[in-house]
Length: 393
Image (cartoon, rainbow, N blue to C red; front, top):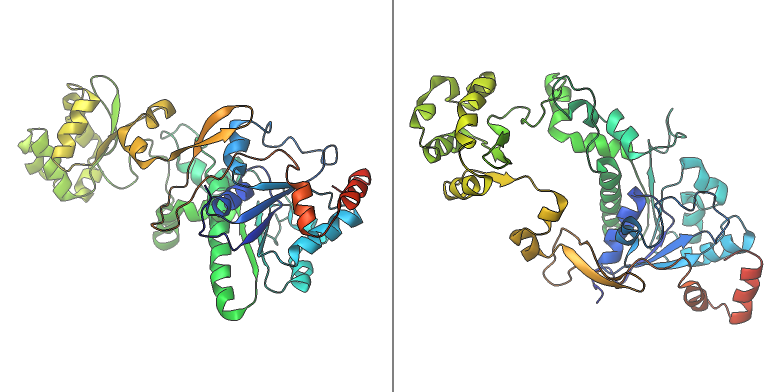
């Protein structure tokens, strides 16, 4: 099954590793014809980035795409790419900023071929500036964007987040920029250059923490599992493990105290407002911890849900996908793989009522659709054989 939402679009995917592939994955799952352009075997010294072809990461990032091998450093390879660009809607790349211009696939090059084309460039630090030429990776951006300084227990030292926040966010922001540019093209008839970076995306993901500094001059530090400004919002130990408790306002605080059968806490002046609870955070938690240790996580979640107090379990990944709500949402999407059999991948977290996303197939083998794509451009069997012999495809 293939989504029809973006089936009118063709995307040339020059990306690798995570940020760029994340961007293109969204477009592919919503039906765009995404052609993953990659170098023929033996050409790219960094071809192994991302792991083996049938690895979980590669399958998850590159599903729903077609693959064309193309050596852009050859005249024939570049000519094929330029021919594809004549009718393509989008090109996505995450080279270092100078590479695309050296290859002849920068925005000015593409715009001369096709004024309607949208080029999306995802870099480590931006297309210009003192760090533009540096190699960027997720962990570097987490550190420079402020995430590692607020993650972890107070005094612990910097801690990276357990997920590739900067990579994933920059891919999603890149996709957002592409869709905005395509929507604007409906009026102007012209494409444009969309730019984002791991550093910008990570700073944007800091959101209210960044705003606390920019607006109020507050430099936030590590708060561990506690929310930076709300209490009690954090992790509390139970009889058989832990749970997340998230009391976000005075009404929820009073509802919590009633659910715990501790009305005296609700009347305690030290905890009467969110500001007071923050000032007396340790005393607040000290009053709650012995109570929560008396019952299991499941019992507390049931009790708190009945009282409309936000709380939830803290899962390992196996528990995540066993949860009944997660199973109901169907975010683990199955797809047949030629060697691994049926595999489950992470589906799109946004739903459309008429044209939902669909994973149309696993990640293709390198060059699996080369002949099909070249044939669509008018190349015959003899032409393709010549191009293979010359190392262009």
